[in-house]
Length: 334
Image 1 (tube, rainbow, N blue to C red):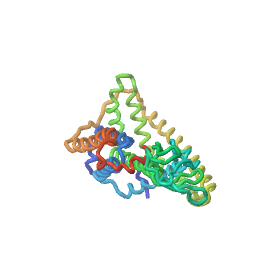
Image 2 (tube, rainbow, N blue to C red):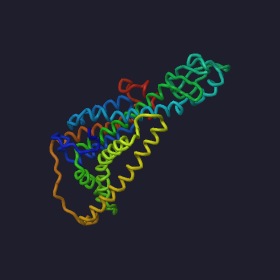
Image 3 (cartoon, helix red, strand yellow):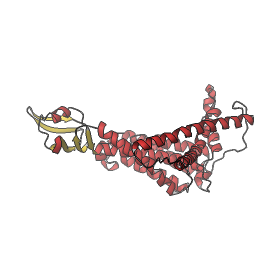
């Protein structure tokens, strides 16, 4: 089956017919909103908006499910990193590890010199030799500590959030590339960046570079598939075997792919030069953009949600608890 990520899919949907300038501006704003700390409730609203936009574009849901695989791999990698890096810090660290003070309500020792417990954070009450004290700690939630490993809710929630952010960003990229032709992306970017011409920035060249880069994504993915089949016919199995064998197989894929990429870039440069392409020449347009009422409605809904989430990220810690999930949010690293 041919891969469809990054490739234009001709369909008759409102998103396909949308003015590319409005579409690009809306997608960029939603991508920016993804990286603001809006809490799990905010990401629920963002996800609903993005998936509604995907549904409106009439793209296949099977393609969206396939995009979950790289997000799951990222989740596992980040979780492993968090297990080592997200650990107890603050005034309580020395006392817990040295058994100074009464921490029995927050942790207990288990087999093999490990600790298991619950630290909600950011403050805990303990009983020391000097009397009751309030200490500031890093909230881990339910945790298990053994040697250098810190298995905790904080590590899990933070990895899940980061993977979901990346998945939403990939989904938005799929929407823009699947519903907009490369030429329209180039012209739309040129219009959006046109104010930069006043300071001497070559906007047309920048938009052309971005358009070619987006267009090369499906081409390189197809090329990688052909190389994998060619290497498999020679007895090289990238998917199975030991970690060392997979590493060698990956090298046999990356090197030919890099060589092929440079070759395709050179062929494209020669083809453009043979056709007399001059990036600095004055040009007119055959296609003139226009927008409709439907475009304005989609644009207004998408940008309003993006702006709302950016504003919400600045006020959500002080809003009513019903508006967010305080227990999970306090245990999540943004």
